[in-house]
Image 1: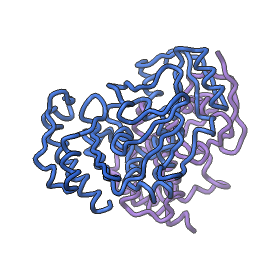
Image 2: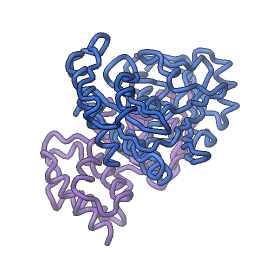
Image 3: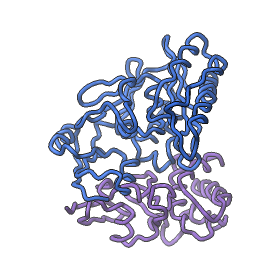
Image 4: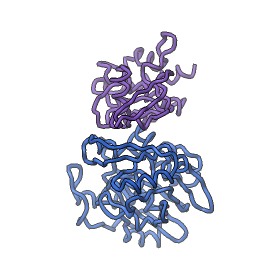
Length: 156
Length: 267
């Protein structure tokens, strides 16, 4: 049974007739070809698939596309402006907050929403806030530095 | 996932009618437990009734000495609510410790209670505060709600609409968590209210339960020392790769004392 879904993705209308089993991450990657959102564990643990749905960071492998009916969805492809990286993206680059980069889109999307809710986060807040995002390369220290710097840059 | 029909009603009335017509349908709240279960084919209902669009099931309000939280209220909303922080700060902190940020942004109070995971946090609060669970049919006391492993008093076609928490004088929740899953290996919620003390334990058995021997001691002296010698027997407690029943039994006494200390410190 196909279901008609429509939503806004990165500011543009998107819609399709889909099987209700389709996870949001597959809709974004396979139908819309927005492959910046990664599938890491596919079990709701690693956070590589983190996107914003109505302004909240969620794991796109743990939500059905139909649950995002009518929602405003933002992915890693939707955060730069006029060819300029988002301040949080720049902070990850400047602070060497990535090695292989697989977890980075999810890290950045979660970090942005974390900072929107905690504009002046402590290191503890950042570390606790990133619990749902796994990185197997960096050991997290530079990611935490990047998020703190990104938070400062987002205020400017 | 196995195939299912999907319904997204806009009102509670419509949802109930869909559940009446589809006896084997499962209500879907935030989906943070149900969707993984569907993916693993641990669950395969023929239909899902998504409650996500039903606005009347959301919201937080304080009236006549109770804090009422709508069933579809997300963990992140409870964690950041001023009303919750002012009335039952222990509940806000508990909600802020469920899963991770992304899970808290979708997971709901009603969904967590209906699922009744043996290591979930909310059942400890509901039992530890003596809350009342309201459904479309009736009001269920916390003591009657959790009936076993993933089992509750809910009947087919019955949906939790809200939960009313009486305001305690003091309360605290302390969780000894599995660092990977962040579920409780043992979590203890203690509260001292008008002439009552409640101690609820999660993570240790097939579902949350009250440690009545501790309650009795604490009623005559609300201090950590009062329960230092009370041991919950390991018989019937969970044993798994994370902790043996004996270890969990030991943890209950340790964590319960920390919870009493935290309640006294107002933390």
